[in-house]
Length: 452
Image 1 (tube, rainbow, N blue to C red):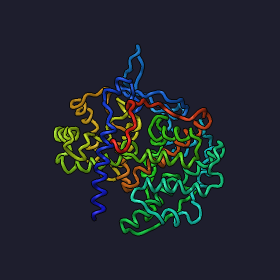
Image 2 (spheres, rainbow, N blue to C red; image 1 turned 30 degrees about the vertical axis):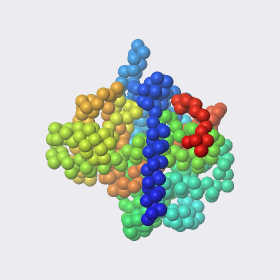
Image 3 (tube, helix red, strand yellow; image 1 turned 90 degrees about the vertical axis):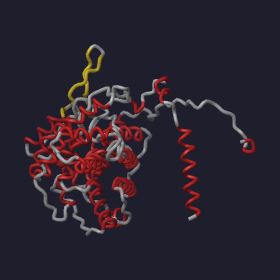
Image 4 (cartoon, rainbow, N blue to C red; image 1 turned 180 degrees about the vertical axis):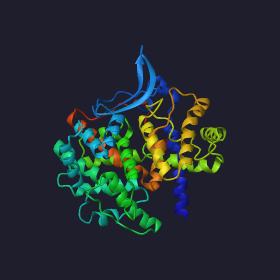
């Protein structure tokens, strides 16, 4: 007990010293023209690289002025709306086709699509005893840590783990795209068994199923799901698969890949980034915020009552007192996030199937009112709109997916984009990525111990 008290006091002192030593005056960022977060005040990012993989449009340039516009997202030059409408028109699942497009630069022919699906499914199974020795032997309370641990262990099963030739990296990438759903779902089953005392069941993935279908098949005790459920989960994977080279986890992958490290390490670095609540963990905060809102707002159709709640959120009076309305606003988009726009109509269909139209209407009300409340309470430099996280958590809840899997589901999708960017970095790799930091500490003399 005495040792614990001493440690607590020691850590308090260390925390105080480190915090005081780490404070940098905000005005110095302006003085030295440092763009915090590698973005300027309008939200425009610092140009750190070139890519052919995806493009985000959120403004137009008129007479040197940035004019906000409806957001658009392109995968390899193709509008995300057209990709979604294309595969849905053919009554086909889209994630596998999207992964092929991102990695290889063009839409697959029927033969290429069939071959890719077959090659992908050949990696569905994990190495012998991997589930028992790795996933079940060391369950984690955070599934992103469990997923990262599993990826690192896969390194030891790969005879060519450090080979960074493009051919080998493609093999490794396809294997990870195929195995992320298995690692994530089995990681949850282990968590649920050890920490929640739930029954343990392990359904092996089926080669004839799409990745979205396999997630639902492996996760549910009876392996049953509707076509609409699997289509909407597949749509979520497509919309999350890639989002420009500048998002935090993808940029992390570029940085780590530029050092020459192996695929597994680069992917784990991206997973560490995605775990953060400012990146992949945002959809969990959205559904938690709505859970709290439902207890505070008595009339879900009352604009004024909802607006009062949102105002209190911004003023750090309610929920987690962060001052944020989760799911609203984006670092790049201003008028709209195209992913949220696509999601909205399909989310409504699922809400009707699940008899949750009142909840959907509440989401719609918040999407309408939040930008007005934010504009009234805050000085903003660009528009504010719902982002993809605003609806994705609601979708996962309707699908009966556990909250613990929300961020891993993001990773299951984004591994396709990470893989494409890793390959692009390796193909064009010229030097290690190393930005500059300016020291403002000044210089001091060393003081001997007896004179301090």
